[in-house]
Image (cartoon, rainbow, N blue to C red; front, side):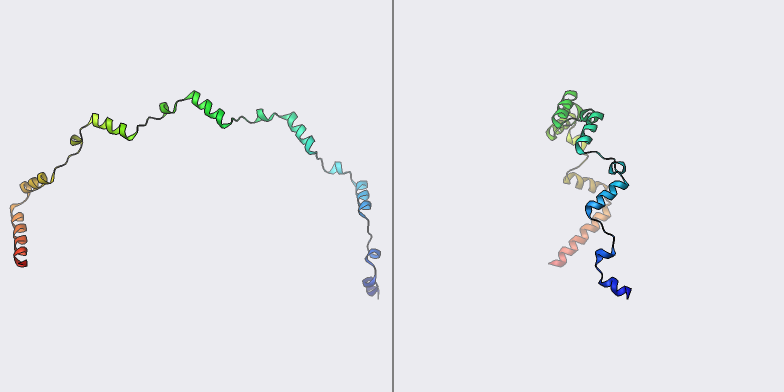
Length: 139
């Protein structure tokens, strides 16, 4: 029976309830919010930060134009990089060396002549004979 009464009863009668104002008053009596959370407003925080450090002193930085100016005063890029453009390289190579001196090569006629001097005569005759018979057989 008590269960049925509880189901039908108004919830306000069952629970000890407080309004928001009463809750706030009870909380303030139990604990002081300032004691619980030590916090500062944005203005107080900014003031404390300004007192402790100057932003310019804490960050040693330059804007891009200042950096470029300082670099230009200290060095010349052309002095730091030893580089040549392609035409300069070609000119310097032509002055120092002759292409024929640097490349050990022969023309096709020279190659054929050298091969004939070194080749075994019987191999040359066999090769000539084989090609001769192939041509004769084709006719």
